[in-house]
Length: 114
Length: 110
Image (cartoon, rainbow over all chains, first blue to last red; front, side, top):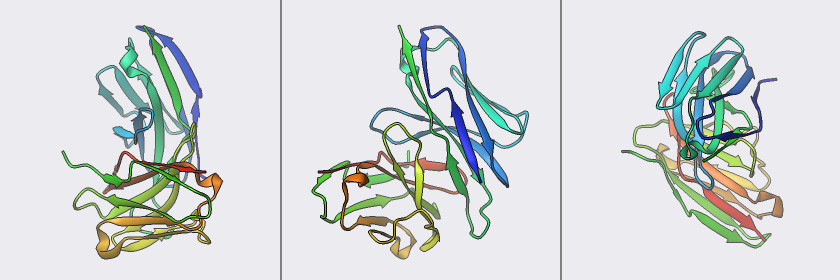
């Protein structure tokens, strides 16, 4: 069964305290791995797409990396405005249909305290 | 910047009533998704369209939920009758490869 698991479920950081979020996946036909940021009461905001093992993408204090079984989102020197839920999603080639199939993890809630 | 538009943003309805959500995807996006997100969990796919055709509705509770995307542009998701357990955020997304989300509709069933 296709599965995407994120850990930890919640993370409390002091401002400036770097950390990493994990997204492990067991899916067939992986086409890409997406990271999103979601603020309370809002829809997910697209951050990155990673296509192949070894690939890295950066945006401000965020860096995403991909291996064959997991992806990491590194937050370097976080600020309070980085507080949000971070979601990863595996994009697969669907078995019977056209387009893409997205399977989301449960998310990691990050709280950065000043 | 193009965005996925959803309405309403918030909806409170009584159980057993009908409720409908509307989504206007980013222009040119053939794939449209409806997701349901329960507080504290990740989004779960309800239905996926490719143009006007449903390509995945395996997780859609078809006894009470229906979705359509006439002319392959905007889409409507309907619940009839609503149940207390339907309270959640309903998210619409569109894309070609990456999926871009709207702001969602927060449904509360009382």
